[in-house]
Image 1: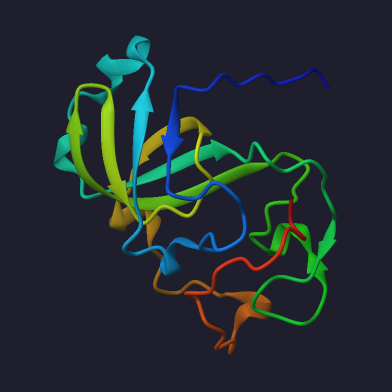
Image 2 (image 1 turned 180 degrees about the horizontal axis):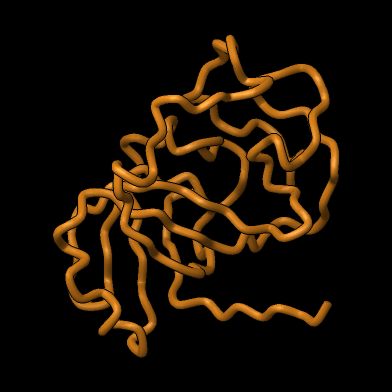
Length: 160
């Protein structure tokens, strides 16, 4: 297979400069505010974005230096295949987070619910659409019955 090359469309700025004490999922980042500085070449693509309350961000996990096909996720003590988890140590370190759109001023977008490191390269923005993005009959596999603290913060670098 040939290489696939993505180029960032902007940079995500957050209060988190290291993985320690960074929210593990955006459920634990409800009050965490950040900004996106979209590169000016893409400003036309922001047209009509203001009408959405939430956005799906796809980004490059730029501090991840390795991958593992089996991990022990933060909500469990058992090892699972990487593709059944949200651990960042993936063959293609792509992150995804749903954030709340607060405001937009030119190329700067203010958001809340950030759970990524500062200076994260942004790959794409998509509007969150409950009709298409939420499934009431979804099954959640090994996560079923887990009652761990979704508001946990990272306490180590084991996934970097």
